[in-house]
Length: 114
Image (spheres, rainbow, N blue to C red):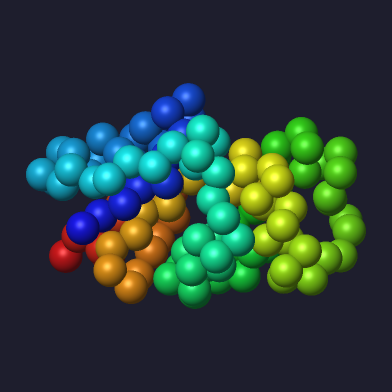
């Protein structure tokens, strides 16, 4: 079962969802801006991605530049920041079983499909 953490207003996220559909995959779509992730969910996703919270931050977002750029935070602090500011999370994130990838570029999703 595939899950996609999706923002329908994001071009890259829409492209990732369409890529899966074009491959014959109908993922469970989770609009994480409408249904925010819990701390446990985000930590689980990070484990599946094999990444630290800082690795999935969208540094081009205004809130990142104004509030967080150049500041040092622990992993747990970054997790709380990402939960409170979900727009900072790179997208789309696609999960299958015990693995997850960020679908930018969309071809990165191939590791889950094959």
